[in-house]
Length: 122
Image 1 (cartoon, helix red, strand yellow):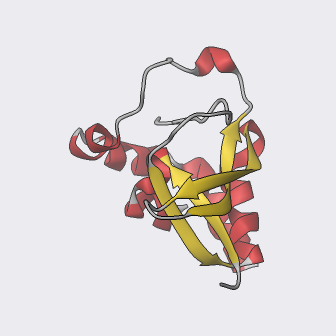
Image 2 (cartoon, one colour):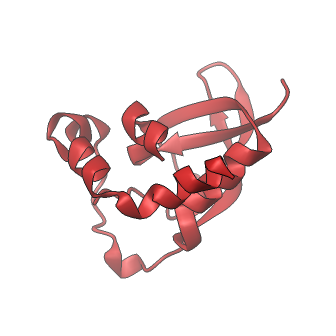
């Protein structure tokens, strides 16, 4: 396979959020944990740069291994390195995010991510 890949979790599992560029799910440790998410493959270097812009200074891209149920795949994910006091400590629920209307609220409130759209226009 050519290109880059990335493991998305939390709000980036939403096709609407991912397509756009209040919910901030976070991986806070990368040792021995399991996180449900999706693997995006065939990304370009520009896509990875846009993801870095989207995640900002509070997330660090790290190497991880994910499984598709059959094999382990080397990729990257974003580890939360921001203020731990902002985290609730509760497990984030993707289905609840979709069915509660929080997905749309997130999209409506995310004007601060327009810089990602601008990044792609350059």
